[in-house]
Image (cartoon, rainbow, N blue to C red; front, side):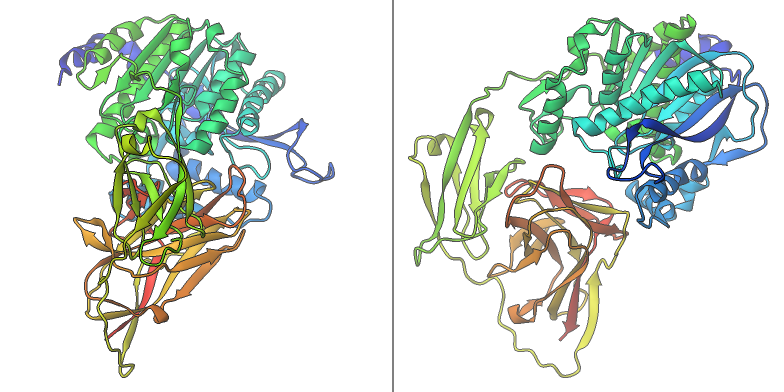
Length: 639
């Protein structure tokens, strides 16, 4: 690794660049934009009638303070604001639970206090500066606020900037989405904040020297803001979505394409210095169908760097402040320093950025080459047909049909019928068809292209997954195995269009034989408009991942629209007896009606040793989705 040039630059660029000239004061203010309605159909006297805007401000002060904040002081603002604006929902305890989630997810224990008690360098009792300072608007990531990257915000304040954090809150009830209208709420919040602070003069800021720092989804809002406010002087994006790779999520792609097609971003008109720092894992296990590259389309003075060994989460302060890994700490420090020096160059006329940038570019773990996408043919291959039982010629419902080991697939309907659209990039791949109780079959896509549609595909029955066991009810010892969490705040799930997606956990069977009596889980959030049908699957464990499904028949669980809370499925009639560890999973196989874009269903997550396994479509591979376990458990009797 070539770190030596960067080390020399850090040592010899001059003490003034890295000296703390100011202390970072922190102020949070609540205001209302009375030109916008937040909660529809309410009277003016309703506290949610007008659009609320809460601003987190870091400012430079020459005074040395005594009231140093800890991370909890910043992080708890999320809970307080959710309670205030989510209209009657109870979010008490969210701060502690989410802190526990972060430390567990990063593999550094289970005590959330390890995060909450971290001291910051922000102070709540500092006097405001007498002179004006250049302004930085921070556009927070999806549903985020200033806490997510407070380290860079307070360092900017220490370097002489007035920093205004713009939260990522959508239309009523406040949840941010990928939809254009919600994205624009952040843009309008930023415009309101600038106008309000200019007028009120609470903190002196030189708005003629204003730059924007954006993280993740905030990059889209920042680009739209700059197009509407061309007097902005500089733009820094941390892995921002103003550039996007299509093909991973149909619902996200559709919403993001609508934003691009709206011509709100106008990259060709960008004339200000632009720094884009990108993570290195975006295309891991993912082949994009196309891309929209804001950076490439712009003709500004621009700088690009990709950190090859980084993840998107490395552009978020929490892994760094928890010392989750040396790599996370190093990357965050590098992007933080590059950002401050870039703003110093553009807004203060300092020249340290150029030499620092040269050192960053010389490292083995960085590249200034954009992700290269080969040209993809846009034409589609259309497959349709029905799946038939070869023994009795009856249709087979809920059959998995998809591209082998790729994130695209579907499930046959109750009549055994299916349709699947693929782009020609999959022409050399294989379609796999599998169903509980039947032998799986595979077809090269090139061969299927020449078959007449609709296809008629026959599956042969498979026997022998579960052995017959005679059960005596005398002296049975009953217990619950698995994850019993009912968390309201930590959850994972499926968006409205993910038929065939599946998630589960490994459950240890400590005593044999073990009779399964019930399956239980907890739905924490459900905004699906249509009844949904899920299939319960029991898999053998093969090298820590799901192997063969051991069930002989479909076990289906129906969830009503908006149904939440604990759901239990009686399994005694299925005579499931286990003698070894098993992976228990729920697979979404049917929607009895139409769900709307943006709707989703989520299941509670909690601390659980084996974590959650997830696959995004019917024939894709299971991958570890989270270090926390989804709340699935079994009521069992030890025979």
